[in-house]
Image (cartoon, rainbow, N blue to C red; front, top):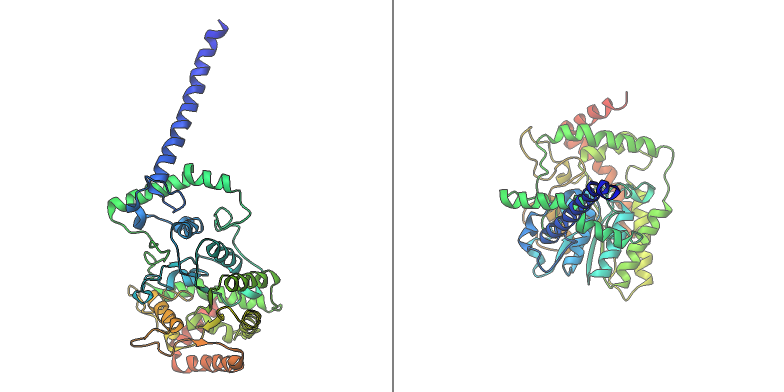
Length: 401
């Protein structure tokens, strides 16, 4: 009687175990066939899914997969400002293999780790690293909540658990399903196969977005900075690692200060920020670059390109609702069109039309002059674009009540 009473239980256990074994086998088969995040390649992987892989929700893992999957000669690093603006597929790159490894909400700790991982895996000869103004003085980073810690970029992660999760995980299976759907519907995802966030990010009422997101962000930062600003030791260590890694690899480093729209940048001047020209950030970055260059004369010298000012391209008037702006997606994200000009200036490529004077290659010799240019630029913005300036003032007033 005892044996017969255990039969249903055993059948139930066998059914449950069999179901989970089937699910694991199915997930592994599909995830290695599709390779949705570039981290589960297999001899039977269908590379025809490459352009349909939806990596937006797992950017860090997928961009680590890109590093593994190709041999890159040049790469971009930084936040969404670089992720969106800089195109690794421009014809001017010629035969160079270029990847965009910048990530949304990326800060220096992530950029440092991503660059370190890339240099360990690829013979990188050019690294363009965006640093958002203020990051060197701010101890904050969202890296514990962005997916970085679960990605191969995290040197302290459990490699076995991580790789197993990629092969049989539900999130990988979900990404595989989306890749299959994208391919069937001929619907390209946000990212290209070189890591550039090129698609599905249109803003059709830029003024509304800047009023809702960018202006209050600037107001909040100005308010927080009134208690004092100083270099953050953690961020300094991260930037020093970037300098050391590139020098050791004989890799050319170009540091970029990405632009903001004048209506965002102008808030710092209008509200009398403690350092509206961000002279402390610029001087700190330049000093560290100069020190590194002097300590390693045998390696390519690092450079600093500054695009964060009141240049006319950064003072573009808002388009009517329903129409795109030429240069800007919102107050802090330039379009690819402006990113193309930034790259042309950095790489000394010819520029047709506007932008031949966009940005400044900074040096210690012109740092004070740059600060004066920025102050004068704000006055020019105020005088030459009164409608934009008045709009900015009105928007700011909403967040000071």
